[in-house]
Length: 416
Image 1 (cartoon, rainbow, N blue to C red):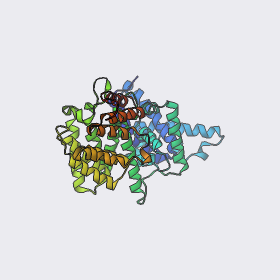
Image 2: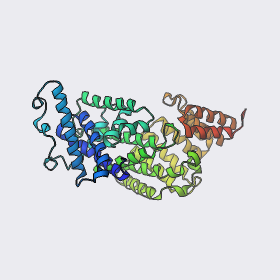
Image 3: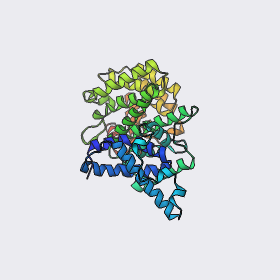
Image 4: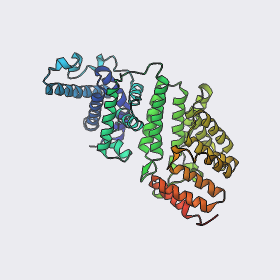
């Protein structure tokens, strides 16, 4: 039986809270995470059939605790040791009394997020573990999202949990000296999840809405815990303002529609209003950070009724700010587009030239694609055609390949 979407939404919301409660009581993050996954799967089958329990969270904690206790007992028995010698006495009970668990009502979402984003893990491992432990996605769902075999993703998640164990990570929020960098890692992982959902790096579809929805849900959870943090609010605003454009990004057959050609009446105005209010409040009350600046750029685009009506000088100025506080080749790449729109294509091409020696963009299709666009605007169709063709060759996203190949085909060959 397939669980209704409402059940899955509830399970994914409860997943980090249940995991936090179980880990807080028993330790063993890796085993607890497996037990919670089993409890979530059991709920997805039993609740639609038998009805939802009065306390879904307590039900999940009880089932996960039983699975964990059974697993630990079996492990101890195989090693021919008495369970009482291997386990904490509290862990030998078949199930905890949820009413007696002082950590039961504590929301551990942020703590679990910090643990999944432990510095001992690689970026891809942080993303995978976050989606499983905090997002409540199954290994199969994560594997499908990233177009890898389920066994490959299972190994990645298993290695991530072992790395956390080997690093001696404790379940709890980081100390004051670690807070900033660890929160940065959490936000970066959510940003990566959102970006992969908004523009898939490979595969037949341009976007994967389930990933953008999950990133937004988790960003909301973090903001509920840290409502005064400007960057947390900025990231949520950025996601909302960007996701608002998704309905207009694809045409028949999933064809990519660039920002300048989108039907803006299809943009989600409720998401735009919420995102704009969030970033306006954050900029007025918190120190400015990179996610806030990116959200401010997205808000300028959202306010424009047409592409030509966009305040490109303001967008270029904001990218200049972003390039100063969080420099990266991708920021410079986006800034080149804004500068081209504000000052002319040659100004953008001159800025792009500064990236040619940057090894971080070697082999990346976006550099060739932006160059092609600006060359076309500058009246150099043959050079633009070559750049579009190069970009199409480099990308692994089939919708982007089709779009770039079509742009190249419209332009003449030969010298400009």
